[in-house]
Length: 226
Image (cartoon, rainbow, N blue to C red; front, side, top):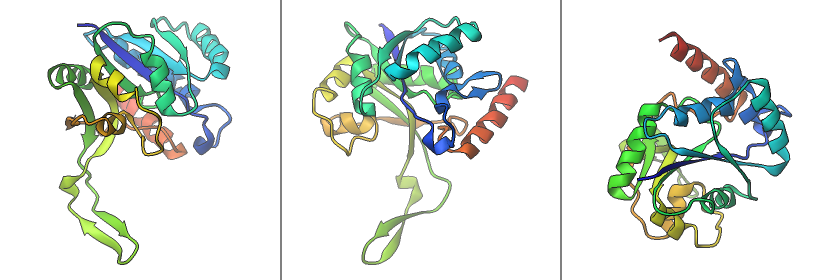
């Protein structure tokens, strides 16, 4: 079986309050995106890495690779208007059957062990999505009652990687884009596929806000010291 990873890196950095897109910000000595690519490169299945990146950012990324002597092999594909289109662009260069993991570039602390589990689960069941059971209480917003308490064990906080057999992913991405498509699981589900969940990792945070970056820096340092 052939394994692939599509790393989606389309962030602009607006919510990070910086002109540099967050995937390029230095984290523990090198750009966030390099940590992410290295995590997948460390997986024992050695997936082929496909980086989907805004065309205007590609020259800067190549400069960073030279500056940091980044040697992890990967193929660069032009990003699209929405995440949906970016994933579709990455998928188009994959030939034949295989298992494809799709991962946010700004989740640099994902472990090689979780990546491996996702590939193996998707190989058995057709897809695999990671998520966390919420630890906070959850309320559903209701226009009439204001909000309603719900059982938190009936919900999952979805992460990436989201991993699929190529047949599942190609079928899902044949449909037109819809605003409801917030991730690959929602695209596949809309096509009629049942989504299989496994437990994610607390450390697998998505860097979106400045405080996320501060947490990631602490976790990255902790990982180096273990």
